[in-house]
Length: 329
Image (cartoon, rainbow, N blue to C red; front, side):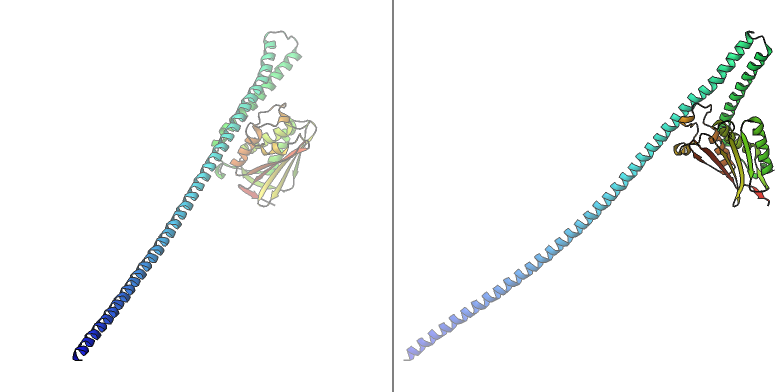
């Protein structure tokens, strides 16, 4: 019996040991699983973190790339716009140069014709006179008068060219100005033109009263010579050429109206261009310099000039000056 008890005890101890081993193994297994789960969780967390970090870096890189691309597009657009402007400006300059060249070529052709016509007359009449084929005094005087007229015309052309070339160097100031009464000055000018062109009706309308004015009479005479000259040139004999004097605020305004051929809107836009002549007046003698010369002198006096015209009705030239005006009521 004692042996049985000992055997049973040993068996019990073995069972307990077996159970303990199983418990230990389960505990170790659970700890291993827990450890592995923790490792997996840590790895997953790190992976998610790295993924988020990579995603953030990728997003930042994409944003930077987009910003760089936008900046590049802006620079390309600006450069393209700059190049487009440069090309446009160059084309405009080239167009203007071609237009100027065409105008100068037209002027040279016109000037050559204008010079040739009176020179041909002078040569023809003088040849007849020097050949002594004319015996009567009346014919001789007639030929001499025509030579004189053509010579005067040539002189006017040369004066226009000289005015145009010299006016840029002119300088007007109060120190070398002359005080005039504008009404008296214009009366003298009108009287001169009445005598020079008696078949035209020169009329002066003074609506400003007496105006004493410090100005440059030579420049004013050049201005009026070209304006009146054009008014006569492009108007029929017997028509009116009216000059109006009036005050316009602190300025004095001189308006010259004629009843001539008038101009289209296109012609008015080019009226102050050097060498420009409208197609409908090319049969009339002229170089296309008168209005340009008048404008240059007006601007030298710090004044303004503009033209209003209606085709086949007439033209109005307006002058305004505010320099050295000492108006008296």
